[in-house]
Length: 237
Image (cartoon, rainbow, N blue to C red; front, side):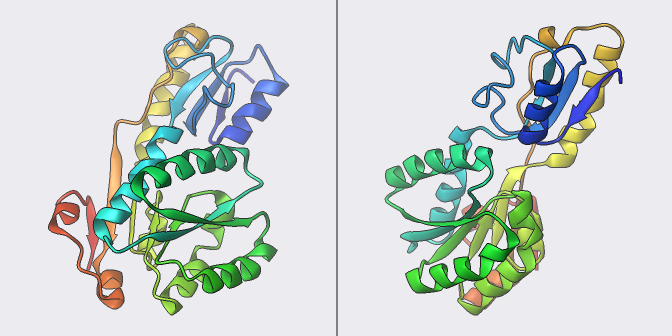
């Protein structure tokens, strides 16, 4: 093939291991420098370039937004895929951010769909005041049972993907993924016309999206601060 386009860090790593000559364009890959995919954002080097979606430094945004929206929160259950190396790196950054904000994170790990029943039992036992979820494919694939569990236990959910508030989570804040996919063909075009990937800087996200579900807020007895509502790109009523 003339070029390979990849959508997540694991795919980018596999492609890089498979070839050092075929150009690779990343789309929505988290922290490509931290995972050794490129030397730097400005000068990627090698045969891989493209667009990143999120850096570990940004995970604090979700906790900050959660605390602004639900000021009483002090214990947050983080349901995450411990088999995903990207999430392992983000977990470390998330713990550091929580300490700064005075929040306690409850570590709830899953690795397969069979782990969710036990994970729900842990969350019910620990009695957190909110849940933080990321758009890992494993977590996203279980979004409906997760939201049903949260509704039963009256837990507000914040996530980095809009799929959660659309099925009943409280809110999301994250990169607008369609924007990254629209920008990716420009990389493909330049490379096919002769530009080397090593000379094309990796772009970071420029467009973010916040979704707030007011129906869920009312069901939970929460009043979303006006300072949050005015920043929302979409409000589900």
